[in-house]
Length: 336
Image (cartoon, rainbow, N blue to C red; front, side, top):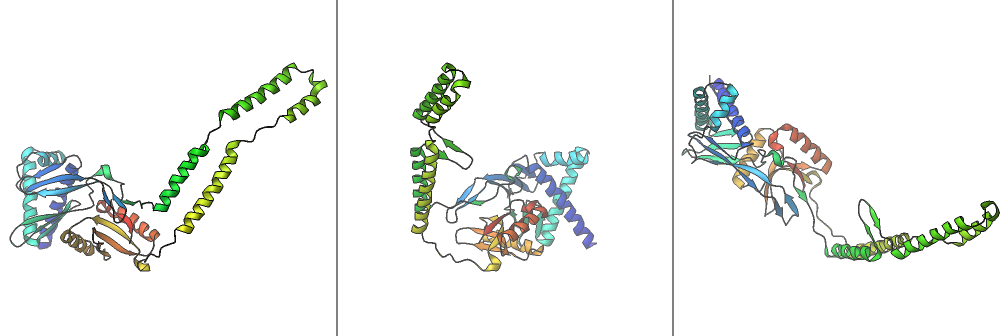
């Protein structure tokens, strides 16, 4: 009987969390009558200057126990799903809330789907730990953290010198195409040559008589070599010299790498409190993720899955993790 009752409570919690997850996709506030409200907050993108990391925006759900007045939103969804009467939908919502309170009283903790975890202490105070993955935000799916290191003084100098030379020498080299600028003097010279040849053809004697003479005259007209091609070669030679000088000027720095078995990790949550991180790790380890741990660099605390020797192994594990559930939809690979 005890096992059957726990299974029934779990099923009720699953139904209630699914209804709330569905509503949070389009609403910023969902009130559970006589229990509290789930309020969604959107945080802006963040930059960790010490690590040159850029974090995408995310949407996090908080719990407010002060908002308990029924606004009809949750009851309306339950009624639409079960296609019953309004009174029946209200009774179903009340039953799910009662089972939630009973499970908190007996177990002290309730896993509320992908939204977070409820805990209740000995004094009866209920607290809520938000899932830091921010999965109730489909508009942010696919946005992952990325690194963008700053340019060194030498790199900035080379880049500025490069741009100055490109504009001064008359062409711009980009990753996709090369734009070559030809001076008006060259165009006028080519046009004059073309006009001279046309006059010779129109006003000369029959071709059978003067063909050899016309060929000799045409051979005297020297086709100008494209000045831009010579400039391109000169610029490439100068770029090579500048790159070699920069490479010599900047000596390689010896960087201490972590152990070979722990160079990469998968980040599940960032900027979390120690209490929430410990709870999240305990939950992960109970589900079989034994390599879950806290990574703290002194400025930012994260929950990670560590122990990957190379980047390929970490990315493959992250792909498998994304398929494991919506909870890990925003996980990303970090080099330690």
